[in-house]
Image (cartoon, rainbow, N blue to C red; front, side, top):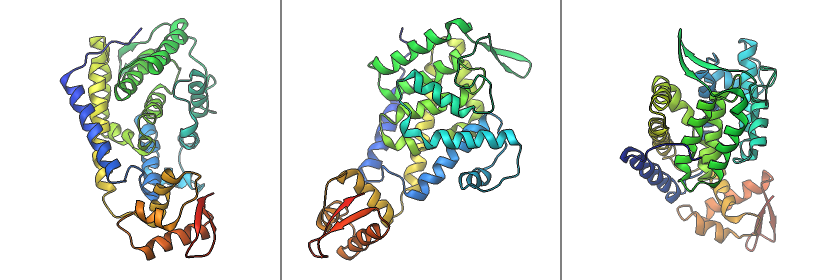
Length: 318
């Protein structure tokens, strides 16, 4: 069954805004963030998603763990961050429409933290806010079939993927398939789905927007529960994605560096050979001397292989 929601003017407006901002990024050839920004955004994503769940580590501590440095903090919090680093390090490998891949991601997220990591819950569960029970999840015996239906919806329904990713996120929280780790899995899998729409979403820290608007995030979940449809949550999440894209446009407004130009051109050239002229035709704003330096440094750093002399050299990505 298709999960219920209403296509409102607010949803349509946000879809248009997200599409426009993605177009601006693509049109300016900034669709792939600079290398240091990709790292920074990944750290923000990990820290924010776990902070929403009560993890105490800050950005500097997450950075230190990513660089294999020692950190003084509760062992549980350190384990959560290390697991998340491993999960997001494999982001491109998770299969968006595979329930098996989804369970493997949960197993890695909750490694050494949950005895049932990678397995659906086997008992009833509710979500509480303070002393008040705010949500009673479906019975445990229905979880697998509900999740199978949700993955079928994500794969086959004709809804725009921007909307389907939000619906998937909400329905996952509603089903609450795991004893623990549902929130971080919902945010992760929305990203995995959005990456099918545009690879930029692998590096877009939407989670940092959610963390800054955490009370609104939970209110949107509760409003959707109360209304019996995902509409309020879709509106919230699309607004968060749009805001994250706005920040991305501002952060990427500076000139591209050599490593970023090379990485962008990799997406065009693939495994084909190319010349300096082809590289210049793509990066029209740089001089021939700058292009030569870019290519020379990439050869020295073993990113490119070069054949022929300088004037007639051809290149290929390793």
